[in-house]
Amino acid sequence: MVDRTSVVPSHVGDNVLPNTPLFSRLVRFASQIPARIAIEDVRVELQKTHIHLLSDVLAFRNTLLNALDDATRKALENRKEVYMAIVAPGGYEYTVAMLAVLALGAAAVPMTPAVPVSEAAYFIQKSRSALVLASSENIDKCCLLARRICSTSNAQFRAVEIRPFVSSPTLGAEEVIISSDRALEENAPAVVIFTSGTTGPPKGAVMRRSYVFDCALSIADHYHLTEDDVILHLLPVHHATGVGINFFPFLVSGSRIEFRSGAFDEAWTWKRWKEGAAHPSRRLTFFSAVPTIWMRLRRFYQTHLRKLPAHELAPYVAGARQFRACLCGTSALPQPLNDFWTDLLQQNILQRYGATDFGAIFKMRLGDKDTPKGSVGELESGVDVKLSEGNEGEILVKSPHMLMKYLHDSEGTATAHDEYGYFRTGDLARREGKYYFILGRASLDIIKSGGYKISALDVERELLGLPYIAEAMVVGVADEEFGQRVAALVSLQEEDMTMDFPDKRLNTRNSLTIDKLRRDLRGRLAGYKLPTLLRIVNGELPKTATGKVQKKILGPQFFPRAWSSCPGIQKWVPDTGRQLAKL
Image (cartoon, rainbow, N blue to C red; front, side):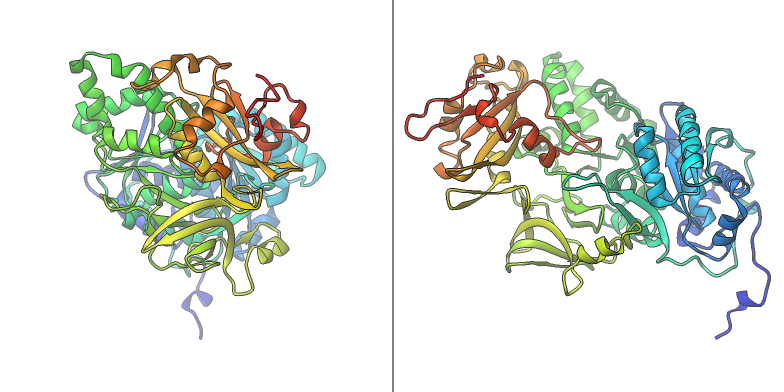
């Protein structure tokens, strides 16, 4: 069949966007009267409408095209795979860069601004990126990176600063055109997200072009997003939640995305919530975070806000209750923390289960009140999931929103699936009726001790139910007698974090013993599940940029092979109950 576009000149130009559902949608938003704010960047006090955004995207797209060498431009014309890195925090510059790359028909490779030059060079070389697009505060580092890449692997590689193009002359809505050429292939690459490496080295998950629209639209539909919604976006924008949950679904819905990048600030966040409840024009409707953020917000409430007089506390509580929905992802929300927020928010925090590689497949619904405690919700529509042992076992997935491939790793892509084409998640779950419960990571969260199989998540859940435990990580530690010991790494609550704190002496690091811990857990856990090793840390457990506790790193770090000679580890001895190692 002859396509019209094969016999006429290509429809391209300075003001012409590619024929994709995403850009068609954004052009329609840009034509609305009155214009709505699409992006607010708190750090630089910037608000931009859709037409402002598209004007800047086109200007930057044209600059990037001119910065490319002839071979790369030819590859784009022929719709070949081209990758471009972005080093920018969440904000307007990031948004312009991301959309400009997509407007070229290329794929974006976002990286954290905190990335060292050596690690950035690895990502650049792995993705074979043609350019790196840098925010104003990262341009110096990226110029250094460009010199390194030029001298080692790609003499044409360049760094391009984003900021000069964030205030381009604003076009009229009628001036922005969608190309009449064939639509860009929805199966082509659009975004590369390097996995966090929680259970292995980072892999570049290549997400299809449908990820930025169809997948985003499925999430938008699930949460009933509208043009009136406003999300406060505080998460990193180089990981799946920051990109695939907090960014594209709200962008394709015409919602406002309010970015505040940088280190998380509990006081600022509570103040912003309070402002949203007090002023209708500043109302927030969605807040999405990871357990670490929810924990820190609770701590600020309990150590500062709760002590205020009732009339001063009320506006903060109203701020917490303004949201249509609050979301939590990346890892499970501990039940005591979940209970606190359910009481304060007067609604459930909507949790989910998923991964970069296959998207969110289990979700709680908006307004959900029936999901059992500990469940991550129901199966997403259109997704094929089976558990390896019937109603329990490894989660095996076929989803329309799965990754296209691992970047330049055909073997890794193939081995990630079973013989029937299901993606092997490595995570274990249990199904009860229509609800799913995550049991943990098969390689990390199942401890084989004394002939028993123990879920580390079960032990963590009960540890977190103790009023003096702030955080807990449970791992299996090799042992000649038991095969593995149940080892608990914990941090303690501050004295005033809970109204019924049972023993203020526990606020001192030397006061909690493994004997006391086991006594307090005995009514909650079977004897064989009780920890036999304990280590206490000051402050929070170390985490990744997305708030994940990396057991494969922290386990050996805090419980080394020679743990018996480590002075910070307490060991429970079955015959006497005494400790062999003192804190």
